[in-house]
Image (cartoon, rainbow, N blue to C red):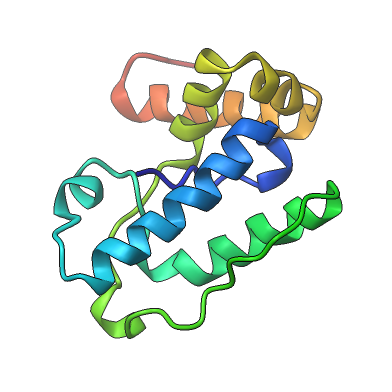
Length: 132
């Protein structure tokens, strides 16, 4: 299970619908009391953002003309879910490496690419691999 957490407009059809499905699977695990700690530790999910993420994915699905018949009626209490952090830059880079459809969507937005390059530069300065 994975929440990419980048803007849904950058996801190809497969990844958009796939993440929607995985959000429902994640909720099912939580409702059944199954552990999702491995997904949290690996930075793959943000439990406190389940509903917001679902709704943003559904909004993009509707913009693209897809039907949606699986609303979320309830989520576990947010105070019990304030865990997990997905690295947005890492998610975008991984999608670009693994999916040509997502790569085209991401590369079409120059502002996102500039932001990713700036992030890489700042990270390099912090890590000491880039000097002025």
